Image 1 (cartoon, helix red, strand yellow):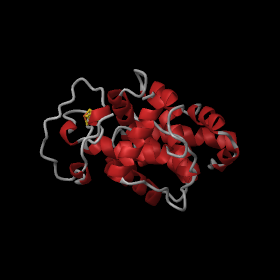
Image 2 (cartoon, rainbow, N blue to C red):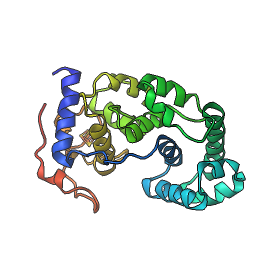
Image 3 (cartoon, rainbow, N blue to C red):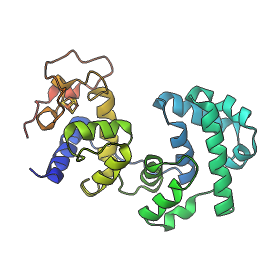
Image 4 (tube, rainbow, N blue to C red):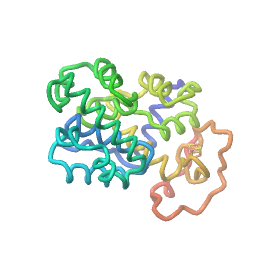
Amino acid sequence: MTVREKVRRVAILLERSLGIPKQPATLPRPLDVLIATVLSQNTNDKNSHGAYIALRRRFRSWEEVAGAPVRSIVATIRKGGMADQKARRIKSILKEIRTREGSYDLDSLRRLSNDEIMDSLTSLPGVGPKTAACVILFSLGRDIFPVDTHVHRICGRLGIADGSRTPEETFRTMAKRIPEGKGYSFHTNLIRFGRMVCRATQPLCGECPLVGLCLFEGKSVRRRRIPSGADHRFMLLDNVAP
Ligand code: SF4
């Protein structure tokens, strides 16, 4: 089996286990996704979502956020963690966008290729490839595969990223291997899979539908009790040999 065939197999097995995620019919605007992704760094979904909602409620526009004192933004997004760093970063990003675009808006990205968008966004303060790829995927609906630390970890354990040492390397390696049209589904399912089964510590290898494909030396196939909150559908799958 080639690596590309293995990636396709993993994507199919995850879709059978978790379903095929669909993008919402109406996509959020690029700047909204950019700021939401900055707020999601180093925290969980609940806290970052809460911080984003609080920010949108407190300020009526991105222009207001850009003009607000840092301490006011910090107080608003505190529940998202690292509030001081994120508030300064958001203000720097908004200032740079205003300089480049003449407004607090990134809709001009729609006219650019993915590579051009990656170059443009990663030149903003504190914006890396994962955040830029999230903007392309979630606001423009294009076929791209963002790689965060969790996706990087799972790709490494499965042996489909050629030993890439960082999420950025994994992003570049996997870009050539994701089946066409599967960027959203594969990314979304891997995130869920990483939370429920292939966790950073004590992965539930005994319940994993990918165990026959996995090269992780620390895997243990002893069956464990599924924790509350985990998806019971993994219990229904037989482990699949390569
Ligand atoms: Fe992750 Fe274990 Fe499954 Fe490998 S066998 S993908 S380490 S849960």
